[in-house]
Image 1 (cartoon, one colour):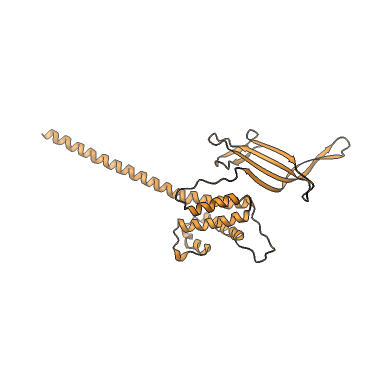
Image 2: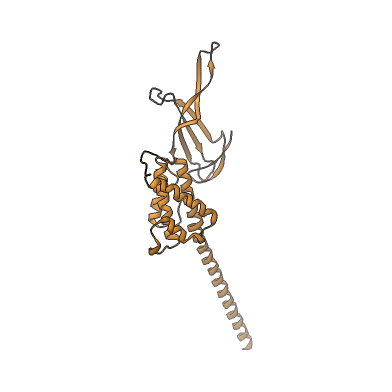
Length: 254
């Protein structure tokens, strides 16, 4: 069965088939308090010839009965139940860090990389780091003045009219979930978790901001410089043509 997939090594979108997907299941120790479990190792090779990267995921899940062995039906066989996943970890690559535009400040770059690296270990910690990264981006990209800095909500309100409405809604969601990761609830006995998958969605929004704000700004600057260079070259060619024409006229008059 094929499924849509994005390579974490290069970002290439493709379809996983039996040609580039391999799954292997095995039993693990069932004497623990967790009971009968199986582990599934899934490996994918990127079909992009410029990448050919390897991705390996591990899932530990419960089991489900799939039938009986023998005419008496005395013993059952089991297979991994992927609807009962207890633990999941990406083994390779350890993290997919997006190449960032050169204009991104080092502190924001480091915070983003830390969020990516920790996302598989602690979704709440990654959400908190993503929130911190968001605040750094807003302050830097919109050049928030010092007297307006402090609370992220207030800083965002200061630049709300400069942000796309659809993106604004997503940013508010990131801020709210990040607050859950950053601040302990008044009821310390209540744990509000953030899963690695949810943290990854927050990080992907941060990556969208890098692409739509920083990378787009750099591209516009490069295009502007290229246009200015074309204009300078055409203007010089025009001057050279006039000088050549002037010299020709003077030569004829002589």
